[in-house]
Image (tube, rainbow, N blue to C red):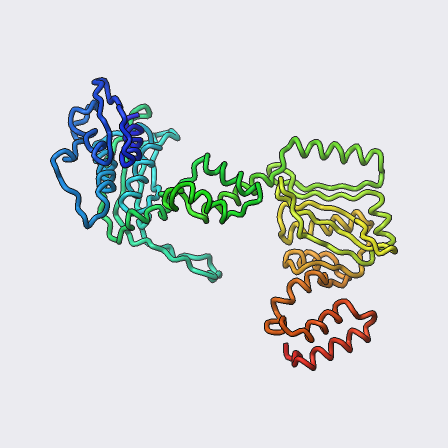
Length: 456
């Protein structure tokens, strides 16, 4: 509790808040105000009784020592000395989590990032006996790579064999942790305290901020705007506690977690499919689960879908541009056109990801459910995984790109021709105004010749 009191005072001190906090059994009260309050807490006789004389908590904070203006803000220097006083060799800390919090806070105030190091255990036990924390620049860059593989890109490394570290150990499982090594000399430039919020170990997203971020993005607000709102709410970016990329990473983890459909929902769905199969013998469904038994992929089609495919299944369209909101699954409908030029549904699938493996599973299952009848022409978008799945499964079918996707992506390739009305008119005629192959070839060749596009 001593460490927690000090951390509270450390944060509240610069806010000019007066607190009456008792320490130890002596009932000593200390009024904390501004940046001078915390310095008086660690004078001799403050109520700490840990039986260790090696830990001197006074740190000369009451001797009128002035702050060095070249180092930075005076309050930051005092705060750093406060934390440093708790980590001097011979000091005791109650838990390993408090040790980590203290050293991270010291790194934030000093200007370096903290990394966990080696640890050793008690004999024949899984309980930690000693642990080391390093500066993130400890060691040398790792230039190793797999045999026979050339790295595509090489990440920049800032490791320069910095020797700064903190080591704590304990005599037995019930004992507090004692600081045995605290070396704070760095061989690299330290970050300015005003920019220390950029350090990896100084960034932390609290549960309340995580809940707010998820609530904002779930309501339709973009991640950048949600982070900007939290930045304004906190006063500045340094007070948010994390960076924008941390917000993206957290939301990605949340999506992966939510993509795992709860067992209760899966059981209800399987019960429905089972009942549907009893009432409709031609109803077909299939699921794929992961190693943990959770739903990964789902496919189904009913009797009406089978009948429509037998009559109109020569041409199909696979569209994987839809996603469900709750479970973040990819919705893949397989559709066609009937003799009334109306859309008909042949099958429906939900995939956990957009990898080639998932699409291959989908199309193999599709062929099984349709009695191995392959389509003649398949329309899809330009997704590479989707195209690979189609090519690996439908060997005889012709694969074409959807007209909507062609028009959507063509404008990115036209360049200056986007502003040419005559070119756009010819393009529109080729895409929508030709009724046979002869008209299309004539319009296409005219467009190629007039705008000198034969070499493109």
